Length: 251
Length: 137
Image (tube, rainbow over all chains, first blue to last red; front, top):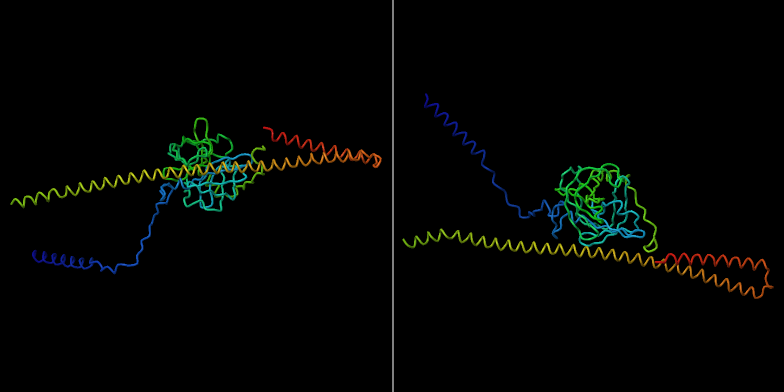
């Protein structure tokens, strides 16, 4: 009786294994394709932190030097590309302008076709007909927090493209008194000409725009939340009127 | 027996030699990478330096262009002032001519002409003064 049960179990297990074995035999693979062309899923130029074939980061490639030939003066600032024909800078960089030109990191000079600014923050938008390039800002959705490490890319004193780092010191009121809402203080060292520089977080997202500094060498940024609001509310941006032609030397 | 031992010994040391070869190749590749890194850094530095120079020259050119515009405006203004002064002189010469034969004209006409010449010369003198002040250092 006992021997009969063991034999029955063994036969059942053998049948199960045999069935299972048949069920798991893989199908024979078909012919290999001969016309397959692989396509890359990611380019080295993707993302602000990525390198292009010329070795510059996307943050450097999207950052431009802004020249304002105004009525009786020439000044420089910094801006960064939002897309191929739009860039962000400060309002005070483009104020009272007769002609605005931007220079890319690789020396291309592009003439601006229009500028629009807002009174709620020191922000202006410049448009160009010629393409600014292929590296654009990726805007963060949230403002930076106190203690966050930031990177500023810009053209201090109108000189070389420079990258500096610092830490967000926290929210504060506008030291110049012109902005509505909160701005942020940082420890990143900036100079004249850095105005309009993008402020990047550790993942390369833009979290603000440099617009001022104080005597303690602290810099102040318009937070990305303000920038995002302005870009969503076009009515807040008013076209800048070119100043009348007053050449230098007569004012 | 001796040959077998030699073969066994050779079998033992062959992987070591291969590893040394790989290490040497790796070291050479690393040197190449370092060299390429240095070259890339130097190239980027050159690009940024030339870009900055180019931008500065653009500033200088824009400044020079503004200076040219200012000089052009100055020239136009100087020409206008010179023209006004010339018309003032012509008016005075004409007045002198009239006064040489005063009987040929009505006194009111002469007085009116003199007043308009005075007005013209005052305006020319004012324009000249303004111009002198605008070009004063």
